Image (tube, rainbow, N blue to C red):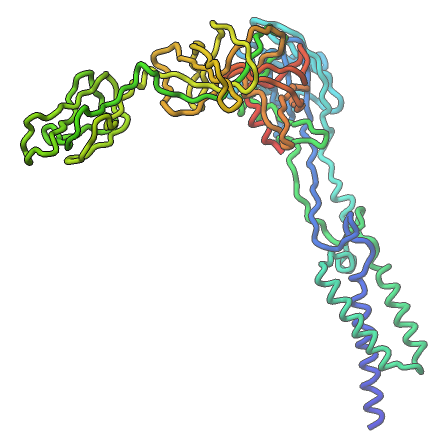
Length: 503
């Protein structure tokens, strides 16, 4: 019987030692780049395809070696538009290769025509604007197989270097605590030497697991690949847009220059009916409303001056008796804007029952919060979302302030203005002051992720640099750049909103 207990105790000792040795690799060395052992993916940027870049005063040439061919993008320098009606010949190591035009507007030559290594290419452009461009491209010599050189993995090594989650580490801690208690209980003082040996093996086992890979991580990494030719915003803030994407988004640029323009101010305004195009219908006597031929006027109904709208019969009249009735007539031509009457309604003299407006004859009441010196013939335009700018004329200015603002009246010059009465608009007024500024389309200025206004400078054929600018609106379609870019720089004027969304 004592022999049986001795064997059982020896078995428990072995079980405790095995538990500690199995769970110990969970504490192995630093894990990932931040010394953690979780399944953290690491982003792996794929290399960019070899490129040929050549630039002149008139042309941009970008060649991308991919898929067994060199695809060439030839764009005009002045506006980044694809070349049309030109030929492209490449001189490579003394041999002339004609680049074949493609239906998508690109040119192409086989990759075999380049050779390998550092290759200098002389591009000759023929057509209306002939030119000569020189560039180089590094062509890889062969397919590398780095994975085969470092592919020595073994089952035991894979097991020891596996990634261990946080949950596994916590379980290992619990198991180690239980194992430590078991050692103390089973070995006691008389087995101090065996306990010391167990602790030595426990301390040595993390060393066997090693620090893992080159980044101190354990086990195969979960990599998220990023295409090197995909549009992206680089760490330095520049936005990489490959030529293929530029063609798809139809990005266009312009070389900016200083222009003389008048200083402008933008005022908040509201469209109101013109006083001479507004009329009301009011009865002269008291009575009840009676419809003419069973119909009463309705909102939106077009009327002419003198049209009969309703009858007002005396209050004492019997039903159906219209003797002595007053006929309500439209005082002016226009469209009924509001109706406040019903069959049998009792009305009093001077009560407004119908309002008539002429939607083509309006005025704009604008508010100026700062003293503004406007010439009587100052040029102005009315802008509203969804409509084209409407030229306007200053009618006058109120001599008194209303709520610390000066009221100014404007009238559209065009009869077909499309401005709805009651709509909020902006009035851009030209001031006498003249100055020089860089004029750009309004769509060229976008809001950066930090909230600041930026434009994109075309720094390289496939790189756009965001520039913070200070600007003022000129009209609904143009802005004046006051600071942030210099004359002579190439700026993106079409597609800036799409480039700004690239992350």
